[in-house]
Image (tube, rainbow, N blue to C red; front, side, top):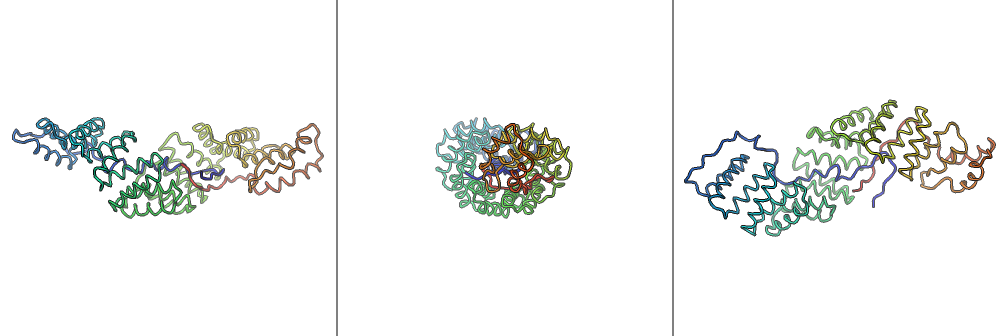
Amino acid sequence: MRKKSNKEFELEPSAAVLGYLIPADTYSFDMRPEDSEEHTTPIVEQTLDAEALLTRGNGYLLDAKYQLAIEDFTTSINKQPINPEAYLKRGDAYRLTIQFFQAIADYTVSIAQQEKNPQAYLGRAITHKTINNPIQALKDYMISSTQQPINPEAYLGMGSINFINRDYLLAIMAFTIAIRQQPHNPAAYIGLGLSHQENNNLMLAFNCYTISIDQREFNPAAYMARGLIHQMLGNNPQAIDDFTTSSTQNAFNPALYRLRGEAHIAIKDYLLGIVDFSISILQQEPNPRAYLGRGICNHACGNFLLAIEDYTKSIEQQAINPVAYRLRGETYLTTKQHTLATTDLTCSIEQQARNPEAYIGKSFAYPGLNDIAYFVASKAENSEGTVLAERNESALTTSSISSSVPTPAKRKARVTGSLEATKSRKLTREPKTLEVNNISL
């Protein structure tokens, strides 16, 4: 179990931000039938036999003329029904044209006609993974790798499924085998890095992302992943550099802009933070964490009404949101709306009991320092994690909370200790600085 703290941000599980980085397969989905050359119906000469049609179909498949390939494979199958190779290739063409169920059917027939058929098992595994059927996908990947031991695509697929299932040690093993069998393998290095990251081996993860970038310069996923490691280690300027490179290679990425906004908060560059959080919000709704970050930046820039609006939006999109309640409460304090501040800080405490900053903020929500304020402040934890009120709570219960009111001199003597402990943490008009801590899945 990894430690968490009461900071404004904690990096979310990398599977949520970076899980999509592991490719579904090693093939390109960029080409679609409508993107390829203008379709023309092939002239199938009567003299072409099943083997010749299969050969010509393979040529069409390599040229991304998928519909022509499907027609030739179909004719080849009609001429020769026992034709596992034609079923396999037509399955590939169906998969590459997003006809997944037809692809699975063809792969299954190919396997039925030829049991030792690692490529058909691999194609069916890729298709099952694409349609979110990881159990069957993992089974087919394993059979494919058993029938063909030198099979980096299958091990890459097994690694990605194990990563999704949070079996990180098995994922590391599979990705490592894929890399040994195919050293130039940027996708496997990203998967290996993610798995090391989830095992809290940050430097190993960092090295894997760097190798992936060295092997493929156009690599927005690896730049984003390495930027996240920089951010976790507190190297925010370097994180911003990697996030910026990733954004130039892939402009639509709301998580990326939000992470870069959080890095800008860490170096107190609040105006750029507002820009990044705003882009993230434009690209993705709902986006409670981006609204939270933009609220912090607006507060720091003195835009208190805008900050309150952003915190409110964050709370509307994520009801269990103790940080947003606390920060909105502190902003209400800044604008001298003590009743609203007390309500928000109370909600924050109810949602997160170990919440010293909310307790301290609540103590300042009372107009003037009195025994009630001291009692609330004494509930807050100091920096060492101890409770300030342990030795005084019984006395407060019999005097402060009773109808008798102590004299000002007695009140001053009783609150002096608490004031000294909390003075350095007294609420200011500047929000807390973002600190990045360990992530947990």
